[in-house]
Image 1 (cartoon, rainbow, N blue to C red):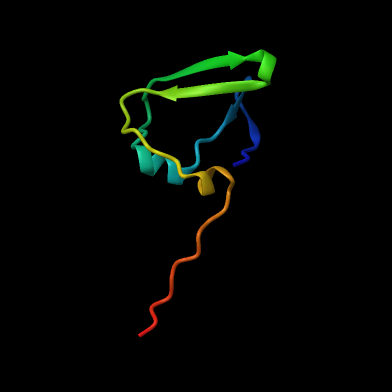
Image 2 (cartoon, rainbow, N blue to C red):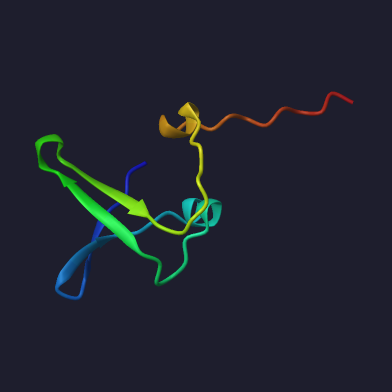
Length: 72
């Protein structure tokens, strides 16, 4: 999943996709821990007080399974 970086005041920000917010129950004001992994060019966000969500490998690849059609 790719997100654009946007200007927010004097800072930069990235939005959290709505489907992820709904799936894990993130709310405004929730705490998030940000870890830098400079050697890997990564920022890791850890949200607290949310339900755990297992992410299927097809979601990580950005593909969606097509719903099966009823053969009635």
